[in-house]
Amino acid sequence: MSPAAPPSHRRALADTAGAAAITRRGWMAGAAATGLGALCPPAAVLAAPRPLPSVRDVPRRWRIGYAESMPYGNYAATLAAILGEFERMGWIGALTGMPYHPGQTDTAGLWSWLAARAGSPVLDFVPDAHATNLTPEGAAALVRRLQDPGDIDLMIVMGTVAGVALATDAHRVPVLAFSCTNPVAAGIVASETDTGRDHVWAHLDPRRFQRQLSIFHKTFQFRRLGIAYDDSPTGRAIASLPDIEATAERIGFELVERHVRAPIDHLDQYRYEVDLTAAWEALSREADAVYITYGRWPLDRFTSLARPFLKQRIPTFSQLGPEEVERGALMSIARADMAGIGHFGAATLAHVMAGEPLRHLPQVYFDTPSIAWNAATAAAIGYRIPFPALLAADSLHGVL
Image (cartoon, rainbow, N blue to C red; front, side, top):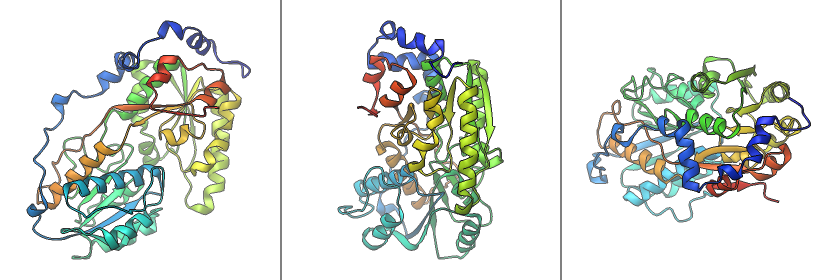
């Protein structure tokens, strides 16, 4: 592949954009025809909604803790959405003045505000029960705390690393995990229908990343897809490698892989970014397209780190979502808004606190994917985004 021009199959896509001109609904229908629809379970197989408990159904107060793998916008947004639903349900007081705005990564200030002002008849947000950047040592200390009866009654957990650390039989406190890449592959829960433990639950969207890759392949018809990930059990789960491999086999493209060991701590971050840069530079020369899996880089470093893909004119798809599209990835699929997961999460918490067994509560929830493009990145790699795809976009970045 010449670095001076897009591969022929990308030029053909751009040249035939008119032939593909369809409505927004038609574009999404086309994605469904190539696998998106088949990967979304029909409504009939999803658990029917359970009657929502009220605060009167909760016999006691619950002391709530929170832990996250690291500061991340999706974690803060999910927490804020759950809280918004609790407000609507009447489980907490008015959230006027709550220190949250879309896109923020900080949850510590939000948690402190909740602890002081939530005004709930049944929930206590424990002031010193917030943990972020969860290290092995920090997780071990938190597990010891969860072994203390009467301290914390339930943990809201965000992210795969935190989920793996706290989904353990070393304590019996209910753990509800959100925003995990692949909770089954990571060993957080046993399956879609059975958590495997009486005190552990995780939100599942079992075909999310297969849907992403199906749309990416429909758009670019690549033959060689580059991926870089930490080749450890946790790293493979975070990247959702089983989903990537299954999609490659089903559709028929080759994976070009590079392994980058995750940073041990902040002192190891420089080594990690040097190794990542080398891996991405290699993939930019060897792959037709690159699927950027979850990583441990700060968002403000993404534009610089991803520069090799622009230089070699390689289309990129962010597994993370629009946050990285805004910073230079070509495209991604993400949740259009957080209201749905907010309702699902708050309802699940409510059922637990009303006394329902956690183990068999529904874990699967998905909603309509939204599309994000970076127009400046498309121009830089020589790809003309078809007009109907622009119409289908829920967020468009890099517009000059």
